Every structure is written in structure tokens, then in C-alpha cells.
Length: 196
Image (cartoon, rainbow, N blue to C red; front, side):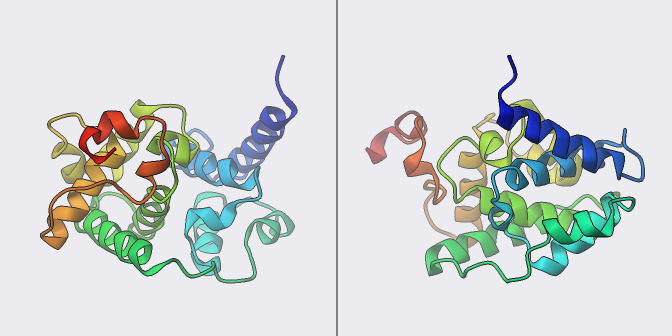
């Protein structure tokens, strides 16, 4: 039996996909999944996008979305400011991702995705769950498409959030440590056994 929340999520995703310029395009499916995962929980602010960024993303990826539906998805207020340490992590990771953005993808879409990924690292679960995706392979495919050089550097096949935290540490010239959301994850002791 399908739970009501799952049906709501599925309907929202179908609505976005129907509004896509090319519903079968991988980018439309990806952004549809990312947006609906947060929209179904009334958590669009967790995407980390400014209202103008989200409106632009919806216009680019889902040009047939009714204006009333797009307006309902785009918050009117700016997201709440992050604590300084989280803000620094997000800014560093966003810059690191954008340094490796695939020139074959739309720069504005890569920018939105970099923000979404960086903000997802603030939450206490596996990155794929924090993004609302269906597994690690979906994260690998997303990073491989949008940030291929970065994805290729994960030669040790680390969990993605741990790897991204290491990328931030390398950018800052500090020892590797967990992402801000890692301590709340059920597998924190597995990824960082010396930290517990």
C-alpha cells in the first residue's frame, strides 16, 4: 500500500515533469526530484536557493508550469541566515563545486545544484536521503554529470558527504573532518570512528 505522503510526492513530481520542456530529460527528472522532495514537506528553504534562483530554475527546467503553481513553490522571503560556520562551509563547497562545473551543462543549473548540494550537507543523514534521491548511485550520476572532475577525484569511493567535506577541508587547508550535518547521522561512527 502506498502511503499518502508518497502519493502526494508522486503527484507533485508528475506535475513538475508534465511542465518540463522535455519530461524525459535527465536534468528535468533530477531537478523535479530535488524540488518535490522538499516541497512535499514544506521545506523548500532547505534547498538553499534564493527566491529568484528557484524561480529561474523552475522557468528553465519546467517552462510549462502554470504561473500559479510556480508562485506557490517560490517563497517570498529570503532563507534565514545560517550560523557562521555553516555559512562558511556552504560557501566553500559551492565554490569548489562550481570550479569543477561541467561546461556542457547550463551554468545557472550547475549553480543551483551546487547550492542545493552544499545545503544538503548541513542535514544529518546520507547525502542521497538529504537530497531526496533514491540512492548513492543517483548522487554519483548527478555529480558525474554536473561536476565530473570533482566526482572523478573520489577514487576511494568515500560516501559522498564525507568526500565533499574533505574537498572543503582541502580548499581551506585544514585537516579533513565531517560536514556540519554528519554528527547527527546514524553512520557517523562508521565514517568518523575517532570522532565519537
